[in-house]
Length: 201
Ligand code: ZN
Image (cartoon, rainbow, N blue to C red; front, side, top):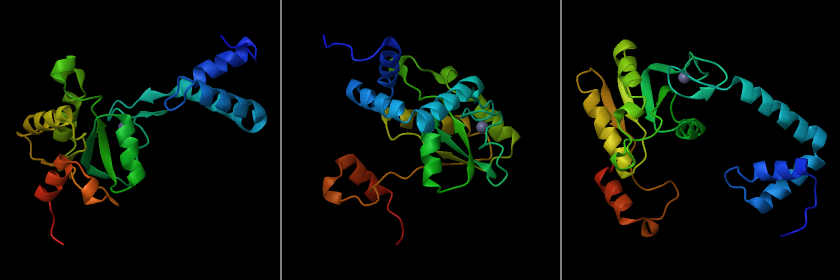
């Protein structure tokens, strides 16, 4: 085993950093050293920000987003169309769609997908609250922004059935050629979906 080069406090910092996604032990060491060097400008403010986040982070009881307020910043934003809900699997999907800034709507985080093999059933997802919102808030469109996986599509079909008795249009994301993508590099399933969902030019 390699000799320790730092005391237990710094070793603990490195060990915790190495649990972050995308950081292995080597990059965790580099990050720790960077934080230590930038003690005043970075390490201190980061520690403060983490302490505040740790105390105040909660789950929005309306949509399932994480924030420091409930209803969350997205739910309480008056510039969003209150009649359109984008349904996503996870908070990271919500944040990804917001980065794309393609639409100003409300969201609903399912907390996963139906997965019979993993024992995930309808009761394990935020489905009843979605039906309640659609019925209560005069929602006119539900955009199913779930992953193009078998479980994602199973979940999309389930939600469509669940909402069929309500006056709401259910749409889903287009599947197809990525922006900047070359046809020759696409897998057959993506290419077939892109042809099927072609649009007028
Ligand atoms: Zn919310």
